[in-house]
Image 1: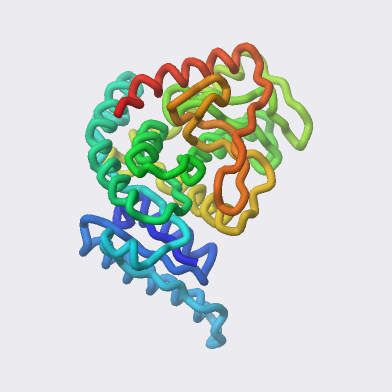
Image 2: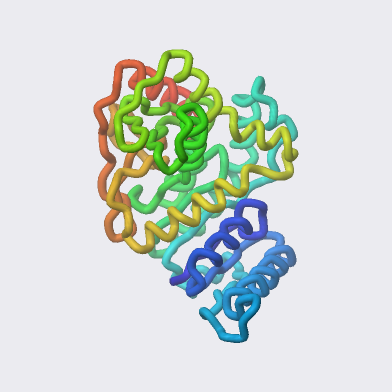
Amino acid sequence: MQIVIIGGAGTIGSTVAYSLSIMDPELEIFLVDIDQDSAEGHALDLSYSSSHLCHPVGTSTPLVDSNVIKTLPLQSLHDLNPDLLIITASIPRPVNSSSKSSTKGWRLEFLKLNKPLITSIGTYLESMTPIPVIVVTNPLDRITYHLWKSSNWPRKFFVGYSLSEQARMAYYISQLKQVAPSDVYCPVLGEHGDHVVPIFSRAKVQNMPVEFSPQERQTLTEQVRDAAYEVIRLRGTEDSSRWVTGRGVSLLALALLSDDISSPMPLSVPLEGEYGFNDVCLIVPVLFSNRNVTKIVEWDLSKEEKIELQSAYNSVKSDCVL
């Protein structure tokens, strides 16, 4: 199978490529980036890395074949006909993006910077046969919307990666309840940003429903909402929460390609009436079949969760203007 990463020389794109190469040595991975030298450097280094799998340390017996990892000009996508596109392309992050007091401002500035880039990619895709697309570029919900609209592809081909929130929630609940993260389930809907909506009404610990006090809910929500900003504050705006995103995107990509998704997965997708919202992308539970979104699942939400989801819609909708 062939996966193309547009923005493959960037922090997130190269991390996704590395994670994919570790998880599935049989993949062919193609890096597309305006910085062709950097993309070529990553492709070479990733290829060297894959050789470790072919010849494990301490043995002369080959274990598996290594990945094919190459660079690719964007205009050659037509000739390749890949199985999946992953979009991580982005203008450098605004310098004030680690400040939680100005998150709305920097996200709007980020949208202003990234929208022309993404719409140009979408316009190019318009001439191609539609294939599944995972969007990672921020601000995620808004960028997923603009890529979808500019491509004129059916909405079923687009998902915005938004599983980091659920992974972070599992981590923080596991800390609170003193259990393993693998024992925790709590989906997070809404906006990939300030208006995250944890669905505590569906939360489980060790496969049993779990209750949280109002203060615990507030603390958990703030921890998940602010987690990325804390990583950026500690590591700098030139970096990001690359590890949780890189692994999460890779897991999503492989699950999508193998059709190994049996439960609803919270992802940012275009809405056309679901949950009462139209012409916007929000994180909602979706089901897949044949590598496409086949159903948006409308859960019964608590009154508070409905109000919070409406707030997320209000935040994103104002920026979904073509």
